[in-house]
Amino acid sequence: MIPAYQNAVQEILDRHVSSGDELGVQCVIWRDGAVQAECYGGYCDEARTRPMSADALFPVFSAGKALFSTLALMLVEENVVGLDMPLAEVWPAFGAEERRGVTLRHILTHTSGMHIMPQPANPEELADWDLMCSRIAERKPLWVPGTRTRYQAMNYSWLLGETLSRATGKSLPALFHDKLLAPLGIDNDTFFGIPAHQEFRLGQVVNGPDLAPFLPPRQTFLDPLTNALRLRCIRAACMPAFNCLSNARGLAKFGAALLQGKLISQNMLYEATRLQRPKDEPIPSENLNEYWTIFGYGYLLLGKEPDRGAFFGHQGHGGSEIMLDQSTGTVYAFVKNKLSARVLQPMKEEIRRIFTHSVL
Image 1 (spheres, rainbow, N blue to C red):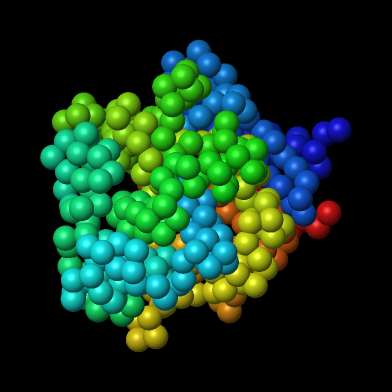
Image 2: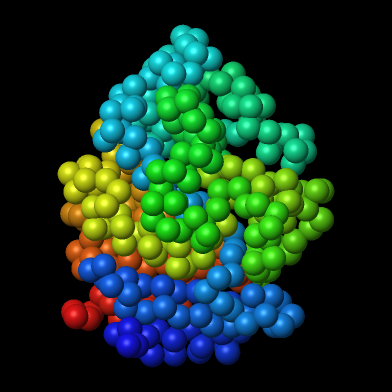
């Protein structure tokens, strides 16, 4: 049976690939627990020798934060950690006076003041979990935690990940596998540290015209961020704030489970998708460049006032994303390999309009 919106979505993908706007795209959409479209268009590589497929894997960058944050909220509901638990309770290095007030809530809401990443000298240092955690734990918050919002783009990996690992006594890869990926059946679709034998599934990522061209990855391995994921040592590590490798099928299954209450309770989801912002911090304007400061508990909130949490999830560098529309029960998963700096991307907005104006 053909999903309800398969043909309409496929036409949009094919048109944007034919125009050159996109190289390769995966798009999977669920509504009310059922697949409404599962479409693949274009190619996995710039030479156009590998047609896009469901199994192909790509860097989705910060889109992985949606899964990472959900893992944390699952542990909150299990009373393994608490939102107002100081990190120092499980991570003694945070016990110094200037860091003692940093809590899990501050990390999830990006209000810790610890968003500046210690600069590694080389990719191997970046991939060294213990080294990066030790350097993070030496830093001082740039303001009183909870009083300002700044996106912890990279540091979210270590601030949240080391806290969860110490609280459970398990490695972060084991937590992801045992509590999230394997139970959802997406452990072959989503990786926070990809094994070598799965690398044949990786597609090529290219920069669109509004992004700077690639330079040799070891020369500038963090600028642009895409360079980091061109290195095996980074792809193999577990740094879930930015090195998630996935496909639209895996992201969509996760999103559907989240909306159906299979991961966290509806009460927790309600709280996690309410605006969490310091009371004296003004709401940014509608300037889309500022939307990276509009958070619930780890989720980007992209809905309109008065219900910003109606549309939430997380986007990754270049345009891959997992987004959930609570008002219609719709999950959107896009994975794309021609990256763009634009927040609003025409193909995705065109597809979303179909579902915004349609009721099954």
